[in-house]
Amino acid sequence: MRARLVIAILAAWMLASCDSPDSGDAQTTMSPDQSGDPTAYSDGSRVTATSKTDFEMRPRPTDENDFPEYIQYLVDVAEPRTADERTADVDVKRKFRGALVMDALFVGGPGFPAGFSDEQYEEAVQHSIDSQYDFISATITNGPPEDTPDVVKERMARVNEYWKQQPERYVQVFDVDDIRKAVRQGKLAVMHNFQSMMPLGADPELEKTLANLRTYHELGLRQMNFTYNIDTIYADGGVSNDDGIDQGVTDLGEAVIKEMNRLGIVVDCSHSSNKTCTEAAAITRKPMMMSHSNLMTYQPIGRNVSDEAIKAVAATGGVICVNFIGGFLNPNGLARPYDIAKHVQYIRKLVGPEATCVGPDYVYNYADALLWILRNPKDFPVEMGYATPSHMGKPGEIWGVVRELQDRYGWTDDEIRGFLGENLLRLYQANWE
Image: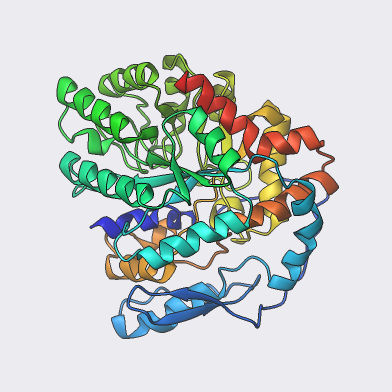
């Protein structure tokens, strides 16, 4: 079902891990946001969100009668900060007004995933605009079996038409000039990404695979993951970081990388195994990326990435974009600005500030996503952390992160501008020239 795409970030909620020491490990006590941040079901009913830092690890229910209360609880604990706490970001947000701000991983498009209404999509987009984002790379598929080439091509064409019908709001991105055009005109630059290669075809037929890739490129695909966690005919996924059998990139995956380089589609290894990342880095002739990955150093789960993989990606001239999901950040499931900045600072120290960026990976029709997970326990087992309590930071949390990077870690204004978007723009330009 299409609704599986909205689970792209929910696997983050794996809470068994360890933390590593870091300087300035100060904690902040947060109070619930009594104003309530509404989160909607697609049927129009509402649940409300508040800010919490102490999560009760309740058993995940199996009786559908218990789902509404449990979903409400998960939404309750998802907010990393209160509205009052976010007022501390006002000065830094004003300071960098005019800086290029880019989101490497925005989940969904109008009408996709299932249950993501046009109204919710526009609300999500408006949040990004209000948070001073100039660009979003939007996931159009994460490769479930039902996302055949015909289905995904039709979906892309439909979303392209949606964007085209609002020229005062959107500029679809095919090259770097489109991003610059959107910035000049005060519009939002929007671009397609895939979180899996499986829509290229489920059978290892090279010519058909590459023909589909070329068609997707014509429709606007400019960034693509190998796989959404699982092992495929193209490469091994994050599950292989845990099962002891990591075979990396297949021969078919290597052929796809080479054609992506030729066409100008960025190679992305988020959700992939560490060996897939390091082998892809050896194969690609253009800079590659991790569009929404955090560190095994601070949260050693299969969905996160090793230092070795980070170094390999950065060595291509690539970037590592952190996400804002508590379960990917630390064992407590916290996604305060401090928790996010800690990962960004680690990447800076490991491979340099020029390799840093953001891919928040926020799901806006959250309640629908949780309901889907609870109804499909075999596909989303609790042992892997699905539908467990965690913060889920919206893209606007970027300004709290910037404040932490400057105040706690002493980042320069130029380094901040790179993190906000210039590093990602450089990556895209190197691939699309």
